[in-house]
Length: 85
Image 1 (cartoon, rainbow, N blue to C red):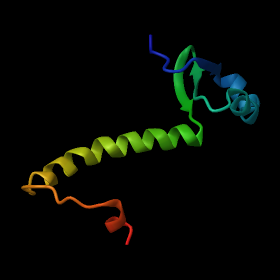
Image 2: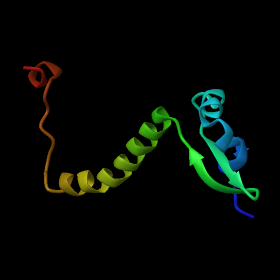
Image 3: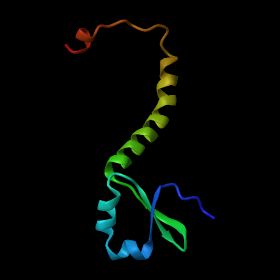
């Protein structure tokens, strides 16, 4: 059996009847669309998709930043005012 990763689910038949209504009912929550009681796909609101994309970007860029930081012997202290000039 496949794991369902959301609290809300619907059948593909119900989803095809009126997808916009189901999206509206779910609000800002993702939900799974099931075929034969297995997840076929997930519907994800744009705000949640943005959060996921940001997390993935951070996971991708963190090793690059850490590697680049190794090339610097010491930090250069600056004030906020110096950065906003």
